[in-house]
Image (cartoon, rainbow, N blue to C red; front, side, top):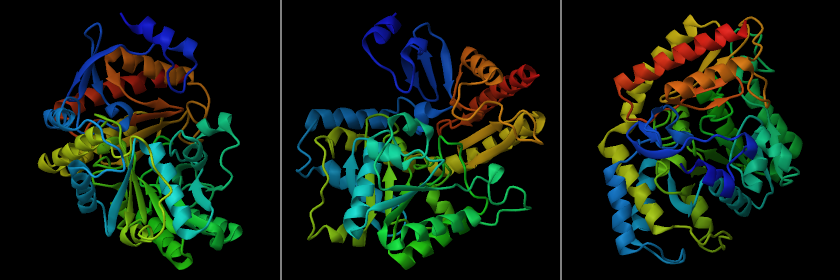
Length: 438
């Protein structure tokens, strides 16, 4: 139908254009979408881990329509009813004294502005991040993430300093020990000491690691709490990127709440509107907001605070609240964990299951003893991983497969029957990948 027109006249993300065969999508509803032939797919990845409330929610669609009728656009310098309304809602649902919000059009722009705000407030230059992180594709955000998608575009911005991750399964510091010793957090502190704490504006971390493989310390709360105390001692701001892990994805409004830590700056997008319209947000603590009472906020975008996008987000927050989706994510997330745990026990190629809530990854290995990845890091999919992907595509289970990892991040409205459908397909995909490995 329109596939060739897409290929002839548009460019697709992160791909060699000659290798592409994208799905022709016609419509979507709930946890499913349909292609142009009528084939139905179970959206096991919430598209790009963002359609948290599912497809076609009438409350959000009606709010967008009403805003389009009343005021589809106005300058970002002007006040609107929906801007104040959403700002207040975000102050209510974000932890602690996070108070005021600056709006962007996506997660990468939000990360860029969070780093700018930290540098303006502290008067310092450097931002410390982690290697196995992804913070977006714009210049500063790509530099901040250690994800290999930054490599073809380097050199990036010069003021990013990276540290290693709390990757217990492959940890440089504690893999051979009986348990996590949090040297990974000591490593961040030591990195800052080498840079000079007086030169570091902020530490930027994901609330829960996302596309790098849901990497988190087994002692997650203590990890963040120790880092919070260290930052406080040295006047360093803590920025938490909740673009992927926010809005119920881990069974709480925001993943950092699992650690009972309040960041100085929180970055949001994706689940903020569940993808119905583009929007990003940077919410800051009251004292940071107060800084700009008598200092200029050197930030702005033509489409910042776009009324239709804000209306989508405000309605989306209503859906999370009124439909109890955060609590549902925690409950259904436990069912998802139980089923994925059973899969991991049945299939020897599963090296580790990681995640929380409705946010999991299966890391696949050739041998559990050696932990050799079933597909190389930052390389093309191996034959077993291709076989798994081919089966899932043919079976109508849409999910994210990267390197040696298969992700499970379905919409928070997933039913028990849909859960069982997804697990059955994953079971078969793992069987085929295990057979191909031999």
